[in-house]
Amino acid sequence: MALGTMNHLGITLTDLKGAEAAFYAPVLGFLGYEKVEDAGEMTLWFSAANGCSLNLWQAKRDLDRTHDRYAPGFHHFAFNADSRAEIDGLHALLRKIGATVLDAPAEYDYVPGYYAVFFADPDGLKYELAYIPPGAIA
Image (tube, rainbow, N blue to C red; front, top):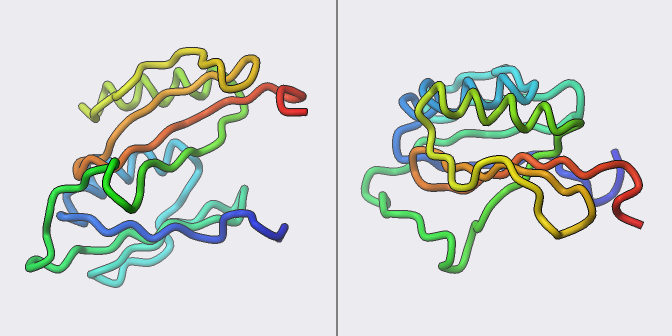
């Protein structure tokens, strides 16, 4: 593994089983992840293609509070896409499952050809699927 690449991301959810069924299973499945462990209070999703994993955790009930991406902590996480078509495909899936689409697929002027969709999970955690054309970042 290359130094600095993602190993795993742990995400704590208000309703692990509900959010996983309605949102994470379809989205992570689309992105090539498979559920490889279910330990009740935690599930593990792994991508053989990139060697990364996501741990989904059940929040402790007495610590449940609304997420604010502009407070200190998690703002958003971006996944890579290999094409604009993958962005459009995820957008179609998000609409099909009734997920919150924050910004529909569009080009952004971060680097030439940057194309992305922004969306949120049931707890309001923000995600992005981004395509950056080869050679756009010099």
